[in-house]
Amino acid sequence: MRRFSLSSLLSESLRGHQGWGRQWRDPQPKPAYDVVIVGGGGHGLATAYYLATVHGITNVAVLEKGWIGGGNTGRNTTIIRSNYLYDESAALYEHALKLWEGLSQELNYNVMFSQRGVLMLAHNIHDVQSFKRHVYANRLNGIDNEWLSKEECKAFCPPIDISGTLRYPVLGGALQRRAGTARHDAVAWGYARGADARGVDIIQNCEVKGIRRDASGAAIGVETTRGYIGAGRIGVVAAGHTSTVMAMADVRMPLESYPLQALVSEPVKPVFPCVVMSNAVHAYISQSDKGELVIGAGTDQYTSYSQQGGLHITTHTLDAICEVFPQFTRMRMLRSWGGIVDVTPDRSPIIGKTPVPNLFVNCGWGTGGFKATPGSGHVFAHTLAKAEPHPINAPFTLDRFRTGRLIDEAAAAAVAH
Image (cartoon, rainbow, N blue to C red):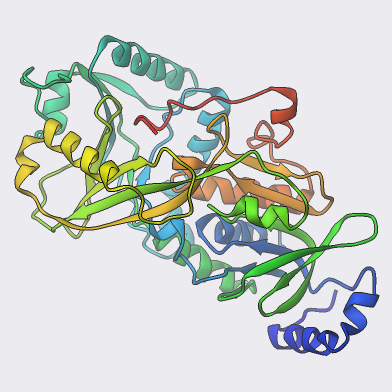
């Protein structure tokens, strides 16, 4: 298959634009790329990297409407863990965590992965029962998780208030010691460097405006702001905007998009040793290597593409943080932001084929997207290369919403999203 440079692609597109030319008259023009990936975030770039390194497919283009790592990849709260309840989810996130553990060496790029532990606090009897169930389920799947008393929680994370005077007193917590954090956008740049070094074309400022299909209905390429690009297969990995892209191929997705907010404090000396999450008061917090407290807030209660969200969401989160960690009441917030998350009805991702031949999708991660990045890219690359799902992502088909075989991880965020 002849490999096209971007300049030749654009010149062909411009020639075709004069009366729409040869490209529009040819029902099946020769594809420029074996695979085109729509979305240049962590998942899209990881997919391209593993297509090249695992499957030997380097005739790949990654199309990003903005800049690499400028979407949700640059707007997350850096948390990585695999302590999910259901077998299907546990397998997927544990696969990702194992890849995270060797990722800096794999990419020869420091993604700043720190296995400082993730502690989920229980504030009532229901929390205790639910988190102990997670602990037992994780152990059955060979995933580390352990139950701590409130005194052990305090010993592991000294800033926690266990005095019993809180509205929601701490009764204990579930700790995954292998979990932790990574730099929010470093994974995108690491995968981008690795994919680029193996011949993958990464095209920024290239927004997809349409998906072209042949007479049989199969996807054969994409219309972009920089011209038409032919493709043997198309993988859509456009977090927050999947429904919009898939509608270009007349595919309706079971997704809703919500603003998800976060914020950071002024930097201080090291004071917080791990990640702590609390469902009852909706608080999750860690400390970055720069000293900022990284605080995750909630989603708005209405669908929107706003990247700001309601102020009351941030206010509620700060109240919760000060409730559990009284020493932070004097901290000042430095900046806040919002990302757009796609959410499925069962709060689990969709990874696989679509009703349109040659068109594949990876979406619906909600709050689980960042932590899944390496595993998501690895199994999606397999799906694109083989046109069949990897065993790990086989349960996460689009078809499950027709058959009712749902994977309901609604509580897996460990906060009330």
